[in-house]
Image (cartoon, rainbow, N blue to C red):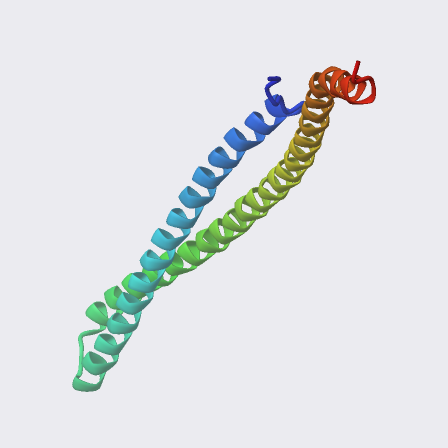
Length: 154
């Protein structure tokens, strides 16, 4: 019995390997984005706490140099927050690109799987037809002999 061989198996294997690679890259991009978002949230929270603390201290009275130092510190935190937000935005874009690439590879894989199924169904139909012909060829001589015996009872 002939064995099924998908004509595009090499391409299918390459696409499957590419899909695994793209999935790993997407997961890494999502993890990076999540880490950056957590850092951004923590920085934002620290900045808000620092501003609240400075406002409370300013109400109670604070030396000018301490106020100036706190303002400088908060300015640095704002800059860090802006940098984190920009980096998060870039990481979000990278994650979206990786997701889009993964989606495309997945769709290509689905198309190849559909083609493979079509070829397999065709292969099975050919196999069934060949087996039917072989069975018919095997049965035909015996049937002719029986018919001849029945028609010529000599």
